[in-house]
Length: 455
Image (tube, rainbow, N blue to C red; front, side, top):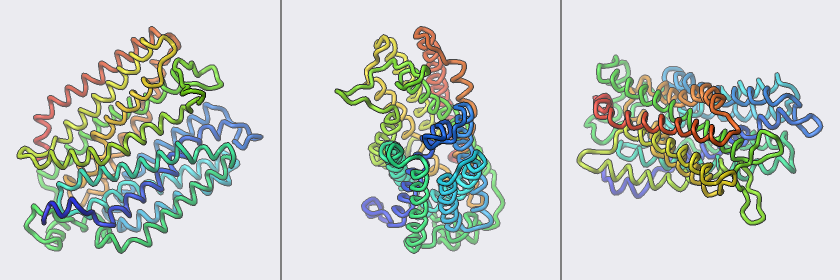
């Protein structure tokens, strides 16, 4: 295969899969942002009228279960159903879930929505990445492809948090839920109508749908027959251990990444309640910047960085020593999120209660760079290393880090929550130091851990 030819053109199926993420993330991030607000809003204003504690609990359940479900969805795609069917069915189930929220008038219906969206996400998320990975015959392309796919993901989240959520003021919560349902049904139609562009990718369960990289001499069909019932080798098991270790380290990253939103919103942020300290100046001229735009900042930085990092990984892969290892990328991601907390502490120290919005933007940029260094690489890393018979399961295992992170970070935040600037600076300063040190430990330990990846 001519590498220069590959770089100039990607298969149309890549864009079919990537745009599938755009529609889904637009709907998901819109619901993620407004779910707790809707539940806690009074019935007279279109909400369910429950307490903010109950609202937070339900919103956390929505997030957590949509991140653990892909483990089971991946297993289904490995052994039982073809991944294409899983993806299409997942899109439809998510659409039905959001339609249930459109008509919801009780907490029971919210649970029905959560269950449907979680199952749908489980069938959709890792499996669509798996199909996309099978479209490429050269493993050197995968890092760049998944970095660009990640930009499509963030186009969706940016659209949701920047534009769609603004419709709540005029449309009301329920009609916005309906719009999210429509987005998912359109997504399903888009994917189903363009399946032909996927070739053979995803027609069979992952354990028999074995792609061939150009560094392997056997044909695709020969490789599939060879791997179909082959037991896991010692090298396979070491590579699985490498995938699990990277996933566990990513728990640290996502725990502090998600927790960063809490001080930005409630310590530096502004609002009508006493819980908002407003220790930052959110004004640009006469425009009071919504705190939800912090989410948008993350998304737009990721959109911009996707092609840049993708090209960088391709260039590094062309070196004699190859690309930077996944362990090093994970370590860098952890270090960057540590520096985001350093920026947060410095912002409060220098701002004296009137922190410039540029500091908040810097926090978002550092978080986003940390995310882009390693998070898009997870799917590429797993697609390259995972044995065919467990690839869907391991692709689903990757998001499980977020599930555990969402369970842990509220407890850590509760320990650090304060209205006292001195305690804030000390607490978050210590956290920043711990996170950076953990990143450095992983970086220097990667020399030995890299052997697992190359087994």
